Length: 375
Image (cartoon, rainbow, N blue to C red; front, side, top):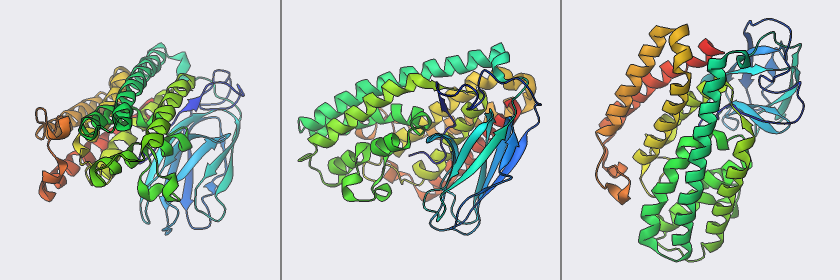
């Protein structure tokens, strides 16, 4: 599951409400600033109201150990979030919002929902810029293609699982995982679906709730047995197909594509470099590759606009991406551990992991500025 979800909206529903809808017509382009402070009691936004247009949400965890994320939702669908914010950590995300009533959701808090109201409408949206429209269409096409490949590779992986072919399942696992890691932010809009596909053991309320890729990863590498996993394989296959069915309903807006790129780079930092996500298989570098590719695609479609608005930042982002890609390439191998194209992550030393972390952190810092420039 991703560290901080990409901000997306599903098409359809109320035309006057959502992330940068087509019917917006009045009010200015000033960015509104909203603070969300996470506590055990809740995460009420301050102020609780903003004019339609660009809204920057700054999220901070004051002192809560049990509440570590805050989401902006519209009718149960997540538009944006910051998660994995342990006490003392903070982050932000930016959205273009139309008028309507939304909710700030912080799972685990005593009062886990608070209303957030957007009033009026915007004069001009990103849809008035042909270059940005083209960027969102290009990104949507790329996501659709990746999900199609995810369906195909997951089907091959689950077929090996059901056939009891442990060695085949090992090599096919990574072939599917990389496609999920590239498009992971999109899956976050449907939280339950993402949880079933990509949840870890510590995310599950009960052992029966632990399903998806990582449950099968545990069976393959830790338990070394595929006995009793056929139903899990069938569920994973069905959930991935469900994702494929729903992805065409998603509308991507420029600011949220940029936020998604930041989220993917942060995901490298929080769960790949730490070795937390692929704790049984240790193909973390392949996941790193997937997150980096997804972030780079998002940045690439926005780069023409960024070059016009802030050429210095565009150059910095490009340079830091190249540095991150070069840092990862040092661990490439053919065919690599479990046919992943990379070495076994257990063989990467703590010092080497710190160097990777520093490079990724610098890239994330640059990418995090893009949304504010193009919103």
